Length: 358
Ligand SMILES: Nc1ncnc2c1ncn2[C@@H]1O[C@H](COP(=O)(O)OP(=O)(O)OP(=O)(O)O)[C@@H](O)[C@H]1O
Ligand SMILES: [Mg+2]
Image 1: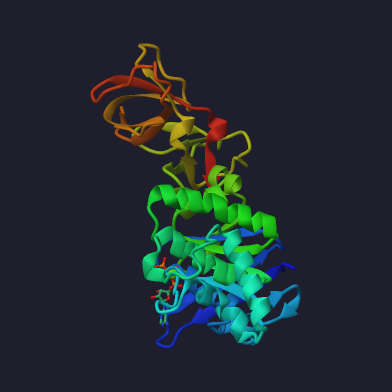
Image 2: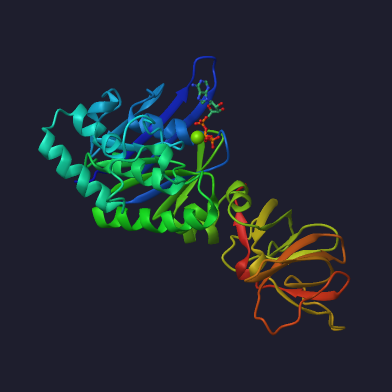
């Protein structure tokens, strides 16, 4: 049976005073694919190692299905872990690697053999039992590490950047397979990655971390469409961020250099300084017209450069006042591409602006 995990105000200060994790609170639901996403050094591995029991929190508590396990040793937590470098035993065969956790639990030989066989079938490695890690591809080694973690039927599976070493194609395939396996087994899976696309593609929910803290927890669409902080808006995908002062009426934002943005209708229309985010794909681009722009939701500019991405085209446009804006358009195949120097008119819908709390 998979478990829920509650991380209640957990901090970790390492010897020497590094505050790696700072008052982190989150609830991971039973059977959920939950990702910890953030830049290098933000505390992802430390958080995962505290869940696993390899590190002890300096303060706060960790509960599994409501029971406090903060001081329960790792081997009594019923958790499987996949490390970034796989950490396979190089001199042992695939079967011996997978059997490791079962032998530690003192199971009999026949039971171990049956469980190893089933786990290897699950990750599609049947037939490779007698190879050693060095005789396997990166993706196959990855699967051995996964089989070794799930063979003990853990209540929770913890994965620390498990796909980091794989090339893009294989990585995508393994993403798909890991997700399928997780759903099939109903596993609670905590997945660490610094790759935002990977987190968006795989997760039920994501915790975005920064400097030891959790910035936002949400579904991939919430994190992408409604980032609550500047950090999240900036870290997840390309985005345009504007900072300015609300105008006297409070309905729009003066971001300087002659650009005024109409605020979304949902905004509370207060006063003061504010940041907003606008995704590049929410901006429409067309050949420059002579018509005056609509105050708050359009502007004239010049294309500075064009980046052909295959499925889409990314433009960097400098607006008349000097603001630089990213615009992304799907590649329809037939439409003409703008080239550097082209005069264009950009247009957007105020409701697509996301107000950030900084
Ligand atoms: N054993 C340790 N002793 C002291 N400081 C540590 C230790 N382990 C990690 N740190 C520090 O704690 C902070 C968080 O490290 P952590 O490994 O959790 O980050 P991370 O998010 O996993 O980063 P990455 O993406 O690079 O793996 C970093 O500043 C790191 O240098
Ligand atoms: Mg790490």
